[in-house]
Length: 110
Image (tube, rainbow, N blue to C red; front, side, top):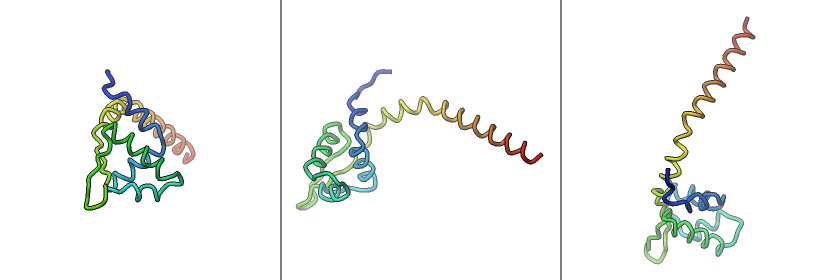
């Protein structure tokens, strides 16, 4: 597998940016609305928004006098596709756990 946008992994590695992505997934917001949800400075939030914009995760739309930030999740598709390859691994583990729990439960009932 080739990684078209290796930078996306470093972008989502930051917990503040992941929180911003989560917020924008629920609707468009101004930088001020986003900054109110954090204990870090507004300039720091603006820097995080700029990184998200540079990597194609955020678009800015002018709405009257406000600039609203809008999530464009398409760059996350590569991350989703990569993680999806491991879904069978986790399903197998969960199935094994289910069988262990069920067998211990039936042992107690006897």
